[in-house]
Amino acid sequence: MTRLKSRIMNASDKQCMWFITLSTVLLTLLWYSIVGIELYHVKGDTGTYLAAGRTIFSGTIDELRTPVYPILCQIFTMGKYFNGMYLLSAFQMVVFFVSVPYLYKTIALLTKRKTVKCVFTCLYAWDLPILNYTAFIFTESLTISSVVFFAYMLISIILGKASRSICIAMPLFLLFMIMLRPFCICFVPLGLIAYAYAYHKKALRHTTAAISSTLIAAIIVLGYCAEHKRLYGRFALSNVSSINRAIVLIRNGMLSESFPPYVTLVELQSPDSVRHIRCWRVEQAKQCMEKADSVYAHNLLKYATSRVSAFDMSLGEHFPACPHHHSADYLHHVQCMKLAQIYLILAILCLVQAILLFKRPSTLGFIGTLMSIACASTVFTTLWASADSNFARLMTPMFPCLCLLAACIVEQFDLSLKPTSTR
Image (cartoon, rainbow, N blue to C red; front, side, top):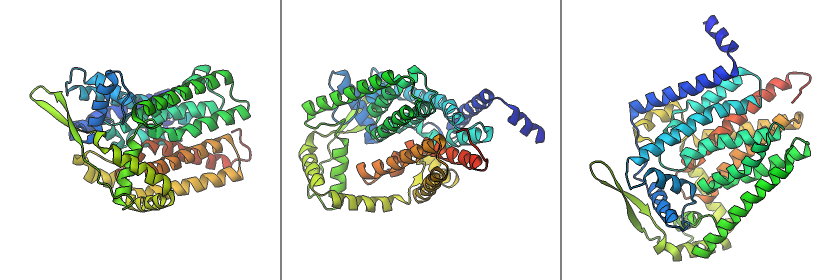
C-alpha cells in the first residue's frame, strides 16, 4: 500500500490526468454494459430538437430551439435514421471524455497539490448520474462538458495565463453555449467580470482581441434575436420561456387560459420499424403565451412568490438527477443527494468563500467567488425561468462549478495556514 501511494504521489500531472481519463472511459463502458444505453427519445424535448433541426435546414430559425443542438440532431439522423441518435450519444460521450483532462488542467491552474487535482477531477468524472447524461438526447449532455471548457478559459484569463487564441475564443465559445442552451446566458456576467478583473490587474495581454471577439459575439446574439422578432414577434433567443411562464401561471391560478396540448410526431426509421417521437409545437398556443407574458409583466411580485413555493417543492429532488430509470433507485442513495442538502452545502461553501476572501483577498479567492456566483446564478435561473418540474436536471450544468469552488476553498485553507502567499 505504501509503495502504491508513493507511485501515485510521484506520478506526473500528465500521467494522473490520462489515468483518470482512461479510467473514466472504462467506467463508462462498464456502466453502460450493465444498464444499457437508454436513449431519452420518448420525451417531448427530444422531438422539438429534431423538428427544429428540420426547420433550420429548410433555411429558417426555429421558434422554440436555438440552433446548435437541432443542427447536431439533424446531422446525426440525416436520412431520418433513428440509429443516428446512438452516434450522437457516442459523440457526446467523447466530448465528456475530453472535458475530464480539461477539468484537471483547470484545477492545476489553482493548486499544485496533486491530491486536490485528482480528488475533484474524479468527483466530476466518476459520478455515474453525470455519466448517464452523456447518452441522453438533450442539451444538458453537452452543456455539462461545455462549462468545463468555459471555466478553463475563464480562469486562464483571470490568472494572466491566457494566450491570444483563448482571449478570442472565450466570447465565441460562450456564444456557442448560449446557442446550445439559452440558459447559459447566466454565465455572460462571469466572462465580463473576468475580463474586467484581468484588465484591472494588468493581466489581460490581448485586450483588442478580447474586445473584438466580445463585440462579434454580442452582434450575432442581437442579430439572432432581431430575426426571431421578425419571424415570431418576440425579441428573444426562443419562446420556451413564454411556454414555461404560461405553465407556471396556470398552475398557480394567475392565468385562466387552458394550455392546448398540440403534439405532432417526428418520424425516424429504424431497421425494423418507424419510430414516432412526440414533438410539442407552439402554433396553437400563441394566444395563451401572449397573455402569459402580459400577466407576468404586471405581476412580478406574485410570480416571485410562486417561485419561492417552487423552491420549496424542489428540495426533495435528487442531484445530480439520474434520468435512467433502471439505475435511479440505487444511484439516488449512492451518488446523489437531495437538492435540500445541495442547497445547504452550496450556502456553506459560499459563506466560507466570502469569509476567506474578506480575511485574505487573493486572486484565488476571487476565482472561488466567481464559481460561487456561477452556482448561485444557475440555481436562480432554473427556479425563475423553468416550469415547476425537473429542477435537478436543469441545474446539472453547475456540477463542474461546484467541484471548482470546493477545490478553491481547500487550496485557500492550505494557504491561510502559511505566513505568506504568492497567489
